[in-house]
Length: 211
Ligand code: Z5A
Image (cartoon, rainbow, N blue to C red; front, side):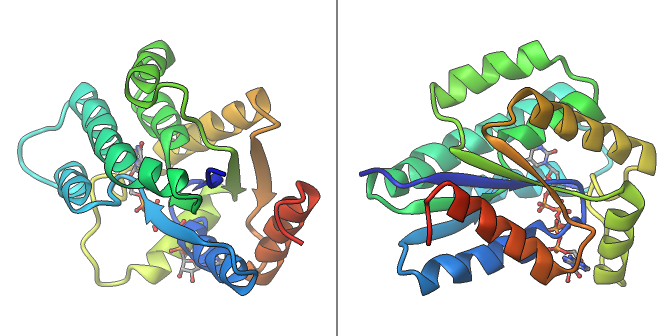
């Protein structure tokens, strides 16, 4: 049997990395074989593309190039890591995936959802997450969490964006969740991390994926 493909999404600082780690612990405690990965990145080559996209540089990165690089990294990640693990029966927990492209390159940068959809089909074929956990907080909450965590660090190209960019990203995510309620579960991530983790556990239990 192939593994389950789960993605975790949300704006900057919402707590994705925290919850992916908690979920990984919960799966390990139940003996469920899985890998944890992230986008952009997840393999040595895809991490190089991540560095290209996130590092601030003098020459502008046009939105179309940013979009294509996200899908280039994804093509590598799918072929070299995600698909082999799913075929081997392991669950894949991925910190961000294509919903981030619709939210950031679509909602944030204004690229057309039709173009994103064409690339999605080209790169992924029929592959879609079995479940996406959308962690949601007001933008001010996410940015403040990230600010406190990143004191003294250099901010990447996305972290330099203003609050209105993240408002469009958040709206893009919520619109996708409304359109695909079966696949995407919206979780109030303004709660303490323990409560967010408990909500995620309940979602998996309700699907009988864990007990
Ligand atoms: N991107 C894109 O544009 N298009 C795409 O297709 C893809 C990605 C795939 C890199 O993402 C960038 O790539 C991203 C979008 C773009 N840029 N942005 N923004 P990333 O996932 O690597 O980086 P990130 O979005 O900046 O995530 P993050 O900063 O790693 O945040 P997080 O993982 O959601 O949060 P966290 O590190 O778990 O928590 C943040 C802090 O809050 C930390 O100190 C925690 O201890 C704390 N925390 C966590 N949960 C809580 C709760 N519940 N209460 C209080 N405090 C909490």
